[in-house]
Each structure stands twice: as C-alpha cells, then as structure tokens.
Image (cartoon, rainbow, N blue to C red; front, side, top):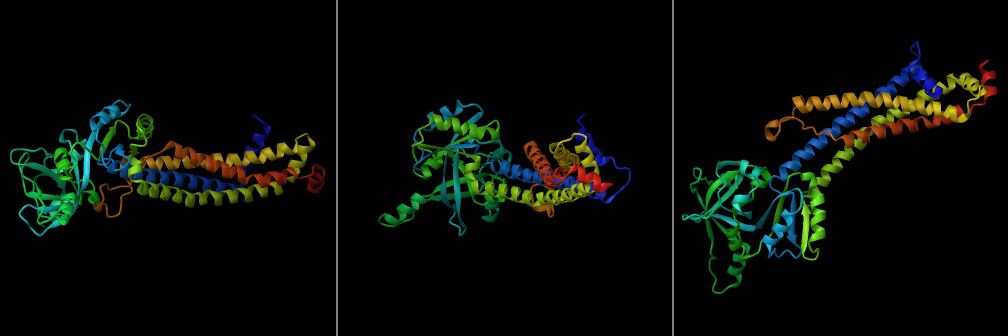
Amino acid sequence: MDYRLLIARRYLVGRRRVTLISAVSGISVGGVALGVAALIVVLSVMNGFYDLVRDLLVSYDPHVRIEAVDGRGLTNPDSLAEVARLEPHVVSATPFVEGKALLTSADGGDLNQVVVVRGVDGASVDGSVMRAVTSGSFDVARKPTGAGIVMGAGVSARMALFPGPTGDDGSSVALLSAPALERMIVQYPFGLPARQVFSLRGTYELDPAYDENHVFIDLGEAQRLFRMSGTVSGIDLRLDNVDASDRVKANLERVLNPDQFRVRTWYDLQPSLYAVMKLEKWAASAILILIVVVAAFNIVGALTMIVMEKRKDFGALQAMGATRKDIRTIFLLEGLLVGSLGAGLGLVLGLGLSLLQKYTGLAKLAQAESFIIDAYPIAIRFIDVGLVLVVAMGLCLLAAVYPAKRAASIEPARAVRNAG
C-alpha cells in the first residue's frame, strides 16, 4: 500500500486516545453520512411521487400522441396507425376524437355542465380505464336502444345520474357540441339545435380532477357530434415501456412529415406539472446538500488542526525525501477517506431506510384517507444515488485542498527546529 495512504489512514483512525482532532473528524464523518442518507431518502421519495403522478396521468394520457400540426384533425388515421404500429415498443395505436360539449339531462333538467368528450373505439380502450370502472361497464357501442356513454363518478353523482346493471342502459343524457351551438346562433330562424342522446352505462374513478369533466362515447358518435366525418383529433399510442417514449417519438418524427404531423410524449402533454415536480426535487436536494457542506467545513477545521499538530512529522517526511506534492496528496487522501467513510455509512443508512419504507410503508401520509396511497412512495434511482456520492466525495476532496496546501508549504528545517 502507498505510504501516503497509510499515513492518511493513520491520521484518521489510528489514534489511541480521543482528542479534539479525532472528535472533529468523527463529527465530519457523521455529517457527511447524515447528509448522504437524507439526500438518498428525500430523492427516493420525490421519485416515488413523480412515478405515482406519471402512472396516474398515463392511465388516461397516452404514452405518445400523433396530432395534426394545424389542429384540424387527421384525415388518414388508419394509415398513420399502421405506420405507428411498425415501431418497436408500440403495443396499440388508437384513433380518438376529443372536444368540449354541454352535458345536459335528456329530460330537460336544470343541471348542465361543460365536459370534455372523448370518442374512442370501445374495443381498444386502455386497460387502466377499463379497470377503473366502478359501476356498470365500459360500453359505448350503439345498440337498438341508442348509444352509450361512460362518465366519471364525480359528474354522475353531481347530476344524479345512474348507470344501469352491466350491459343495460341507465339514465339518459344529451350532448350539445360547440359547432351545434354556433349554428344555433348564426342560423335563421333561431331555434334549439339538435342534441345527441346517450344512455349512461358505466362510471369510472381515475383521478378526481379528471373524473369531474371527462366522458367517453363511441368514436363514430363523437365524429358526428363534432362534425368530423372521416377525421380524428389524433392517434394515441400505448407502449410496452413508458421509458421508451422519447425513442419512439424520435423515430416517428423521422418518418412523418414535420410540416403536417406533430408527435408528443406523455411528458409533452403535461410539461408544466412534470417540470414543477422536477424543480421541487432538485430544490430539496440543494437545501439538503448544505448538510454535507457544513460537514466539509468541519473537515477543513480538522485537517488544519492536524497540520498544526504534525508539523514535525511533515518536516521529517520532507527531510527523508518526500516532496511537497506527496504532502499535499496525504491530505487530499485524508479528505477522500473522510468522504468515503461518511458516504459509505450514509449510503447504507439511506438505502436501508428507503427499502424499509418501500416494503413496509412505515412512514404514513397525514390524512391518508384523502389520497390514493397511505404511505410515502419510494423509487430508488441509482443514477441519483451515484450523483449524491460523487457530490459528497467532491466536497470532501475540495475541503482538503486548503489544509493540503498549507501542509505542503511547511519548510522542513524550520518545522524540525521549531518542534524541537
């Protein structure tokens, strides 16, 4: 083993009695360990919430979406869907129609609400939406009795609408689209526009903000409602791995004409929300890194005291042939040892707490009954763990620079003479 590493290790752990220097070094190691552990735990919790929100949103948002650049809809959805299905990771490519309409009771009741109407092919609806059905069934097909509609539980409760038993019609509702309202205003003579009547066949619960204003109808019914015969709003792609969204987007952008088609991933559909969550994650990390910075200041103090106490040793080492660079290296290694020991302890503690929370849910959320989970979620990202370790080690190494320069500046003869 290199003698410089042996000396650095001896200064750190080779003392036989507890001194002020050893106490400060121990505090430095503890500070680094605490900072690293706190960073790993907090980053894991932030990642857990990020994944939770992402998975919740992509339960109704697509992984990748193809739209027309001009916003007028796609006139060749079948051919585009075939092109999309050729891409790796693409499991399904489903055309959809989406727009806003006025939802009213079919009997002319006073309750009205503007909702987002989504026209889909009932046979290719994402499984997460199907699993979210809480009453009735997800049945939007047209039957002899009429077309079906599925809406959020919040909308149905507020308007006192109820689905029938599985496969049967329930309350009747009507949809009035914006194009129909426009024609009512501009046409002469004035009159009530035609409404499309639907039977409520199911309700679902995904996210309260989504459930309050989203309803599903059949794709063909939506095309008639919004006067989009032969066109669709876009094509939603579901992948076998959500992390492959960027690669699929890049591939499709090379294949499709960028002047006609726009490709967006799940992140592009909710950019503000995801950006805020990432900002919170790194803001919390920046605050917690101050713990390691404080520990680094302790390292400066501890190593500076070692320089003052060991002046004779440094003089003797230089008299025996050690260079100033060797002296600097000893203290830089001392800083790395403190960082390594503290980071190692923090890594074990941080990962241990994170795994304990992940598999036992020890720390519960306050007022958990208001959330879809009852404990803090955990998602360990090894790239985040590696970044924390690198930053901690870097700060410890930086803290050793000043004591190393000071030790290297000691004159051998003067150090030995003054010590004697």
